[in-house]
Figure 1 (cartoon, rainbow, N blue to C red):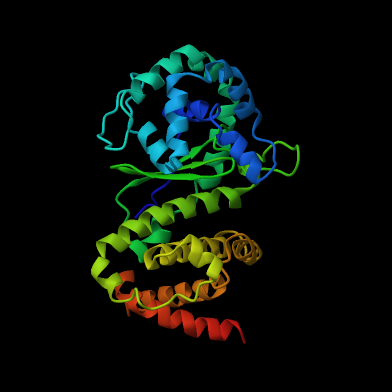
Figure 2: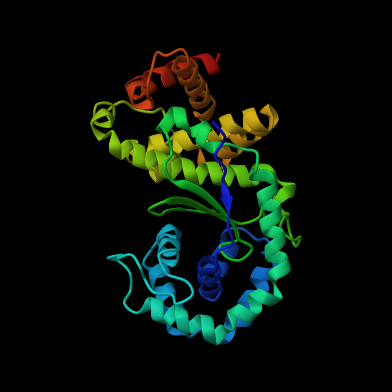
Length: 330
């Protein structure tokens, strides 16, 4: 069976939403969290559309951000619009009235079609750089022992606009999409080209696809999860504060563990160790080395035929995690 591949897209609906995002308080919020230099295209886009800062489309988006609406929902809305007429094709109960019409008017008034034509070269390079590094990886096969066969198409969208420091994962009826910015550089340096830091792209893709897949998988096997939610996962207080439910905790541990596992297999053990150290420092995932050990144990036993699916193994996960922590701490 031939390997299924990730499709790389540049999507005008994503570019439109990113242009609107550039004149909300989002870029300022990014800079408050960490000072860095956004991609030159993002900065020039923000400068070009600044005269439309009081446009209704911008006010609507700012209101959503102020209400705590996640970027996942905002970009799900964008990708639920038809193109180029920008009509909402899927009912989203939370969606503001007439936002699609406002976005269409913003697109015309901002002259975005002409602007993207001028910037065609930088977008083409982002596409080519991303396509070059994902051509030979098979995430369908990588995730299959954990979530079964993936029916959706995996889509990767390189984004040189906003958000400039975080990836966004989106589930559509037939696709799982990951919108990923380039890796930011230190100080006033421009962000890295996508193909000069493949690990950054892989981390983003695995994190977003893994989260979307595992959230769905846990819902499908809710009865199994109900029997183990009273078993603690040995997380830190910091991690518990940001992920209060067992399902959230497990999903985040699974995502971080599979990213580390893939890094070790596809790039190098050194890259995996660097990722593990970063997750501990930034997110307080102290148990991650033990999580990786448990995932490896499951994969070995899955290959031996002891388990037909991950759901059969899940009741053992907390117990095996305690054992792995004892071994790792020796």
